[in-house]
Length: 362
Image (cartoon, rainbow, N blue to C red; front, side, top):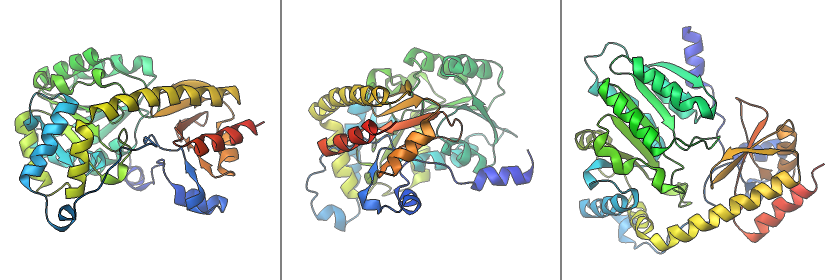
């Protein structure tokens, strides 16, 4: 790869969801009038409740962060709180870990990173920015496990394999036993496995957070904002070996999580009643969305999770434009023009708006 190509991959804008401001300019519809279905964020958020003013006025206390970690331990089922590192969003971890990991591998001259794609574009971007050699493997969901296993089976020490589980955007899922097998293989060969579980909350039994003591060179990333519908709170967690967690936490530094976020996050992690009801509702709403989209178009369901649905068809771009003209934003992809991703509507009026727009599609 030439220097120009590398610079292009560093700086070319990534097509993320949620770009309402860009859509507003293109379609001349004010941003406040859009229904944003381009992300995988729960549209019915956890109620943050009232946060005492003191949490806005002073720095968070260590005891408050400890309470957040205790709640996260129960939610993620980690062996201890010492396995957890809290950060201001999973994105902050994705950007920090590549530079931090270099200090863990000072004796290794060159590290190659393998990303199991197509997937969330920031993984490639952030490891490139840190100076690593990157291979992005454009895999079919059914081939992804064997591809990762083959790479780790012959990898040099220090090799990093990154996978997203369930994958974004296709929703394909590795079984937890397969992740444990890959993590064990990575450890045996002196390699690293990074598992992005940002969309795992709807299927918590498939997480490997509870198995982290068996996986000394595996790092699991978890997102708070998606399932709890509070992306603006900016909270993410990394689950890993205790010594590594302590070192990464030192790198991130003190007071990384705002006091109000600690309060809301602690309450949300402990509210098992809300979590159970939300998983039931999301599963029902995902089915409802599938019936609406496939019943009013020639698109077919290609994958997804209970937070987003992934459809296939030749008319994806045309349908996305049809919806955008009515102020509804869905997600198209650079890697495949025949795919589109829908998030879930949240209110009865949002469902009716999408239903009317889909019914008018010819």
